[in-house]
Image (cartoon, rainbow, N blue to C red; front, top):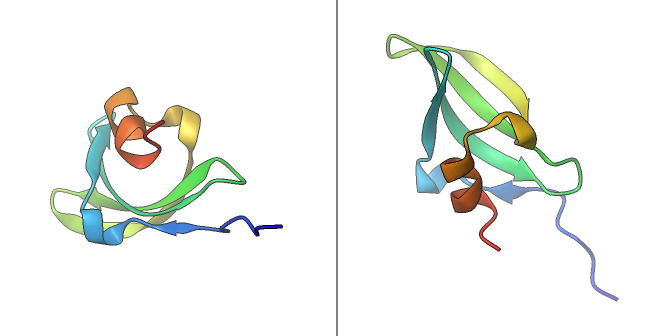
Amino acid sequence: MSKKKKSIELSSKKIKFNIEKREFKVIRYYPTQMSLDAIEYNDGEKIGMINIAFAHIPKDIKKLIKPN
């Protein structure tokens, strides 16, 4: 029986997206929780790390993270 991955590292892919004038860079994806960790930027300045629900990210980014 195979064990599911707890997280998928995505920092090397350099995936960035914007939500309401806020910029995010994806760090890792948690398939069991359907969420991802991202670093939030404001005018190029790092604000902090945030956990975002998979349903709240743009559709084109979803296809990059979970292509099926």
